Length: 201
View: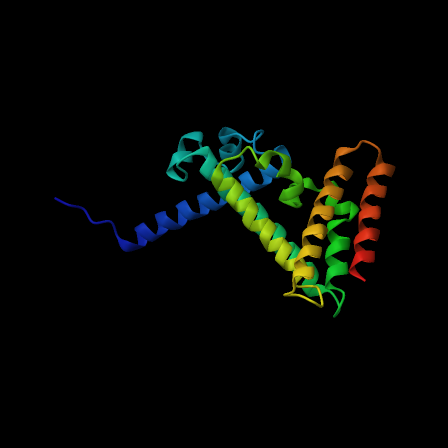
């Protein structure tokens, strides 16, 4: 005799699996920003998500697949924060708002909730093609977001400035986090901000 599972029970199981998947991805996104790709293990993520290690393969085909999805989540959250900073700004001040938020002391001190390019950039080149594809998509999205703030958006000069701006922003925060001298850290951020605000004029 074939037993047919009630539709409600099927939906309930699917919803529970989806919720568990979301917990894993959220935990993995936090972990990669905190510890890097190489410092993030499956057992740690599953424990943080409140699940058993054995349940991992019900959600992902491999650790690399999990890392790619986690990177996508971290990148999406960072892009949303940058877009929100631009949206909150007064007319004509979106670029300044984004620069000051990105090059802030708060961003420098909060790696777990910050830009994945800073936290993971040096490791990304050694990751799987899936992870690199996610990072590339995010970099393009950020370049486009910055270029759109230019009065000459759509022209080559706006895109070129955006390339320089993103490179400077990421490099400044990366160096500011790396040094153990708080004064130098602050000067790195402030110098980058002053330079980019001057270029913007």
